[in-house]
Length: 272
Image (cartoon, rainbow, N blue to C red; front, side, top):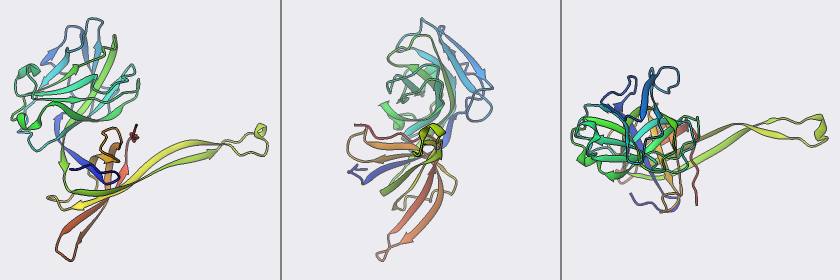
């Protein structure tokens, strides 16, 4: 899809569960990693995989991997997951999710980069492909997490609920509404000046395009990339729930869908 200024976007539906992370990964665990199932700190299901990284872990090492059994992934374009780090991960692609047709992620067909993470804050991650292709992932049997660059030293990573996202084609236009609620926090010392503080933030919007297979169902969770220009950094990114659908047919017989959505996690803003 061409990405034109103010006129492009990608919508992904993470409808294939790769690994729910409700059991501890056992296919392989690096000797410098202590892996446990965390039943108290997780985002989906009943647990997450907690990986304590020792000082000996180095760039290029696979922290851990797990046996999976998936169909061909040619129709998919991105991985989603929940991730958290005990330290700031200031650069995207420091960690990668791996998918392999061979055991123990020996020669991954797909490598997807994790984004920047703020210390001790769970993040819903949209993980684009940086090496390989989903078309090559014909019958993946292993998923893994790799420390790819900028070794943070002793740290802990949590991973939860990995899914594969397919792209919804034909999106023509989009709009976004970002709001903040404020509360009056004026004090006597402020005199006649009112002082306000932000209490909550919310975002919502809509997108529309031509018919692409079956319509998205109300309540579907989607990953959004709302592009402002051809530069990859100039996009709004986040996950949202479809809240409304408006099908229409034009006089020339073209079927189109318009969707409203409500953002459900933090919205990533464009950067220069």
